[in-house]
Length: 310
Ligand SMILES: Cc1cc2nc3c(=O)[nH]c(=O)nc-3n(C[C@H](O)[C@H](O)[C@H](O)COP(=O)(O)OP(=O)(O)OC[C@H]3O[C@@H](n4cnc5c(N)ncnc54)[C@H](O)[C@@H]3O)c2cc1C
Image 1 (cartoon, rainbow, N blue to C red):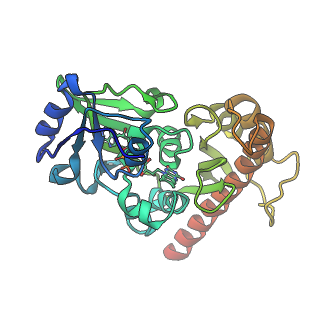
Image 2 (tube, rainbow, N blue to C red):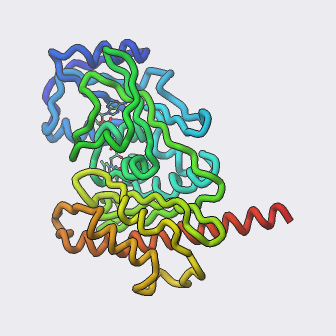
């Protein structure tokens, strides 16, 4: 199919973009990478009166560290996070492990992180990382700029707290301390499809005891989920000697956290090839394994630091 006809607007500044979006008579959509929008327009599931192409607004490009946060401008493409060194510390490692799961290279070279927050698909890797880490979505609208905490931002599939006239200007992610280990594991049916379930984890371990845990669940509900109950079960737990393989003994704190995440945090929605029980089982297994990966990463970072100080 071909898209229904629409006006095409090319602003040069954030102010012009906001003005175009505020022209409510036309039900405008933002064009960032176009990797979701264009497909939806071709299928005529979205028929905007106007498309506001933000690709020529230089102030929306670039990412930089500001204080203890990484500020990712609305034009930063998924591919920018592929090198583990693009972003400092464990946050960079988490983002680079997650990004290779998003579609395939041509999509990653156009699609943007902010566009993923705009689209708010329950299977978005970035959105689950955003809720797990307490990210902030920066928006500007006719009434000015405001910050939306990721924990209050997602309201359901493709539904967010952003008003239609507001432009996402950036996403801010807190940097992770040098003593934090990270993991990301995704399960999907074929190479380039969305996740059936995926898990992001960040663990801070002091003297073998977990002092902070962050767990984000991808496609385990109608929106990204932070697994609070599973996280609570880990605080104060000892990591002990880490099992060598991916299988965890039943009584291991990571296996327990997986079962809690599946039972209390996830609220799966059935999909073709993945019913609710299947998804709960996948959450239980993947949470355990991702925590194991994060604990191993934390251990490796500690060992590297000790070696450095010797
Ligand atoms: C085959 C295929 C596989 C894919 N697999 C995955 C996957 O595994 N994981 C994943 O996360 N994504 C996947 N995607 C989607 C892809 O990551 C998109 O790039 C992303 O969802 C949207 O980013 P975009 O920059 O392309 O946004 P666009 O397509 O340009 O816009 C998407 C929506 O977000 C809104 N929007 C975009 N930017 C802004 C902004 N700055 N302010 C306000 N609203 C905005 C638009 O109005 C529109 O409604 C896949 C896409 C395809 C086609």
